[in-house]
Image 1: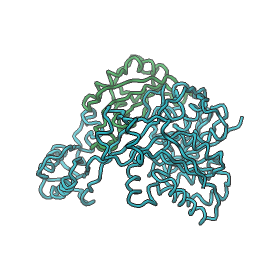
Image 2: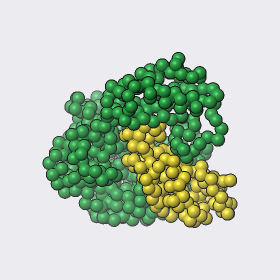
Image 3: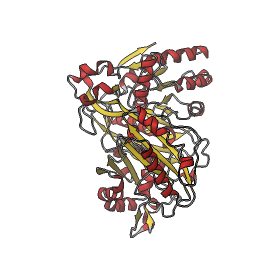
Image 4: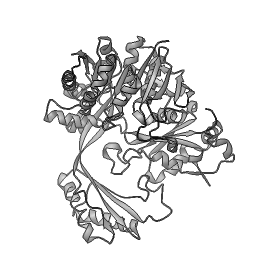
Length: 116
Length: 443
């Protein structure tokens, strides 16, 4: 089994009690696959134990990015959350550990030698 | 084409105090920006100012300014734009002037104010419900508990201050990106409705506002950072047409990955990034690699700003405390959970909200990441939130007893009782721009 982190990188942060998670594909082929498969529903199901009230997905094709907004996932946000990660800073790494099984992983893998 | 170099040496209050000095020395900047205000910083500053009318601003800025003095001697044209003023930009400016005088420097300091809505909040409430943008509730429900209410001003008063000849601009609450958009407006004289250029400068400001986060900090491919000690801080070379290059003064620089991660950081809909000056489309820009530590960003598109300012309101919401204990040996997670439950029961009354977590066993994403191997030790962390300070203080006294009255393997109680701290909850709202007047005063 492969993980999302092999095909994408990302970053997360807070907006009040909501968190955003940006997932950025390493290749255009990876972006196409993620766009089709990493839907708001899939992300909502993955984070279900943390009870987001709603997940919205936005697209930023110029950076091969998908931006997920997970509403009410921070148990109060920066000011009121009782969790150690009050601001959802680690949620991108959590999502990047998701197990996935794309049919053509070679086309989605980071090639740092290749000029960007 | 004329370009202006703007660098950001501080991403939040608590960021490196060396970074601004290094960036100013190595970056050959036209403008140094310093960003100090997180969502809830204003409430803390508001209470400071209530206790002492000469405080209520980010004191770190004065230390930075003092240490910057030799660089300012060498670079007489370097200008500084900062929101360090917090709840009291006038007092901050007065103190900054003293610091500069002691260092033998003469600089014109400008103060941007008008963001503080608290003194006339009740009058404004007659026409503005200040509905909570997240929950839809009306502010009236918590009005007596409000401690601060600040509108996020835009770049315009910063640009006016610079045009009036200010070398240092000290603001209260402004949108973070405005610290960059202001200098761009002053340098290039763009029209207030030149949406594409305003969007370009907004994107530049958004990219550098969190300091090192755009140039190596938090980068997922962190193994490629050679020197974490000198990570570098970012600057942009912004051109009159709005295009810009972005790099940093040390470290790995800016590449496609670090830039993309920061572009979408704390963003909702990237097509409509709302600021006081413009609605910026973050998906409109093209990225181009210039060299292995410099990117070019061009093609920004923007549209007309909304008729409102965002308002950040903070209100008193009881007390919180959190404490930790180290739990080692076999069955660490089971023992930690048992200790946490016992601790809450021993308080003797039920608290409004509580949370037990095991650091080292999936606490950051509870239920989502579950460790496949039982950890040999975990840090028990228990946190409570209650309206009664005495209950929270009582809770804080129940950590130490577990060292002798809990299961075996409890240790690490060395830092004393956790403190009960007052909670300021966050209330985001909107206010019509027409009722907010930004003020610029050059000292």
